[in-house]
Image (tube, rainbow, N blue to C red; front, top):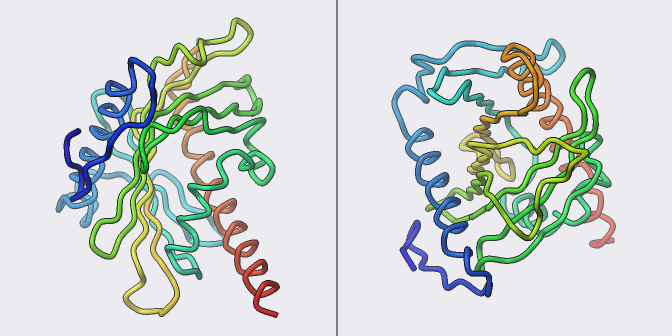
Length: 236
């Protein structure tokens, strides 16, 4: 296996396409890391302010790519990054119970120790009917940061259903870094780019992707509250 971020992963999946799926996830990870580390990302040169939450001040930026708009957001979370990240990885099978946008979620199979395939069914949203997503994901520790990246794959284990459109994700990446100003806090950064497929105008796709991102920020802040409450109860 090829090394990624100082870790060489041995595949545990018996599937014949496991190497191809893993490679797809690794490519997304490397491309995402290059974007995060670029000068244009840090200065937002070439990025446009897409939307701002009037209550929290959270800002979504977008950048035009050859496959459509790439969205990003950066927020602070009042929690240790490892506690948050571990729950993010481990709770995929119950994620839909806490995410109002999800009808269902599951880990289809492990690819390696730090990679898997995830399946998510999205609920109907406004004029957009229910979609599902199948992504190969890989995660790594990078110095003091933790990062997970996922990209859509063709997977015979979960073929598309006739009654549901299969959407595609080019980027589904999150990076978590300790806050330099507040101990016990972390900075969460998202990169996401997708195609909802079906007969939807590009403007509708962009609007829905942006709304989903803002909603997901709320969901992740709720995760923080849930985890901290569980930790406090365990300690008492």
